[in-house]
Image (tube, rainbow, N blue to C red; front, side, top):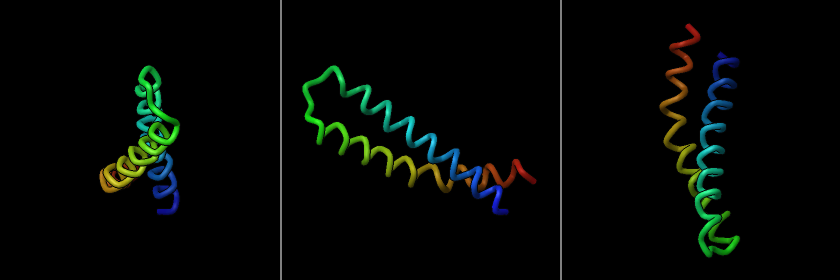
Length: 65
């Protein structure tokens, strides 16, 4: 059970970090301030965590059984 939770956390955190990184990469060509870039990236990271947690955890549990 503990191993499943750790694997799930690594997966959904990785997905959220990639999404935040893509947001920062997408804002580089524009004229945005650092606060707008990193604030937006933090917002994308948090929303992706909220959305992916309830999806990834059951999938990993089912896969590990």
